[in-house]
Length: 107
Image 1 (tube, rainbow, N blue to C red):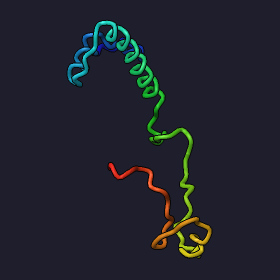
Image 2 (tube, rainbow, N blue to C red):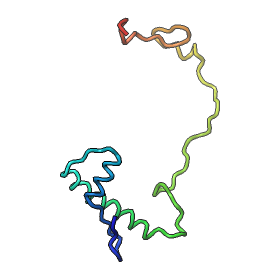
Image 3 (cartoon, rainbow, N blue to C red):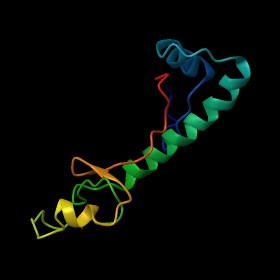
Image 4 (cartoon, rainbow, N blue to C red):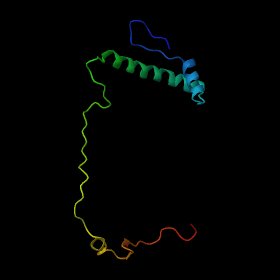
């Protein structure tokens, strides 16, 4: 993949795309090669431009916005008993909700 000196411009050729497609066992026709090669070049140029501004003092990150865990601690709290939960159910069986069968006996 030739790089243009003094520039972050990266070119990827149809032959390189064809080679990658062959390695991935993807069958691409000429129209697809003509369409994909410039797109891959733009992607590589974008990666190169990011690499140019990345400095050693910039920590690696996987997301642009700092994220923190928003889950609460898993604490056991009092809840309904099985009898209380089933008290309003139209039908129950063995401490479980009883629902109509969806599939017939053919399953």
